[in-house]
Length: 110
Image (cartoon, rainbow, N blue to C red; front, side, top):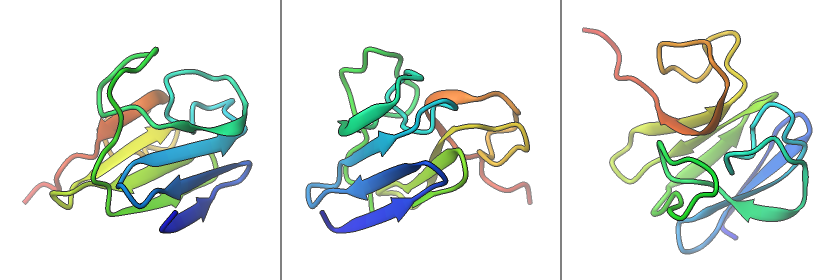
């Protein structure tokens, strides 16, 4: 592991190969595995836009961060993927829907 992040009741780890794993509470889909199943053992985070059961996962991630019930990943092109609870628009995708797998954070308007 090259980095870790702790949310309210969940954790993330960035592996040396650039993949992301998560574990803990998943009541708001903050683990990014496409489910709301709590995980006592780390699971891989799905790729942006995938649905469970995922067969593609985040890769080449540069950094991870965790909020209360949501998670973020800095992608290879320096854009951000976000997943989990979104009632206060914290995922930056223009909605306030909870996302069980990563979505692309929108670019700022100029």
